[in-house]
Length: 102
Image (tube, rainbow, N blue to C red):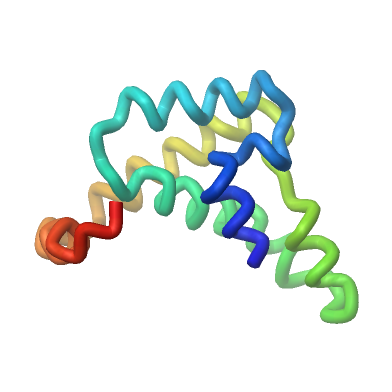
């Protein structure tokens, strides 16, 4: 559920404006329909240790309040996005394109 707000608002509901602009800059420059999904996965991956080490009773609260704090964090996430894209088989992209989700 937490990722839905990221998707619908393109991260603007949880991040400060400067960070949102930085994310949007990457989204606008990239012609891949899956970039937003990659960003969400890379963001969660960057918070992996925090998520794993949080008490299960507080995990839902944590997940609803996760945010990208600054543009340096965006740059790190985008490096991970690039790595993930380079490791994703082209056949997967073709498969997703055929689904016409975006």
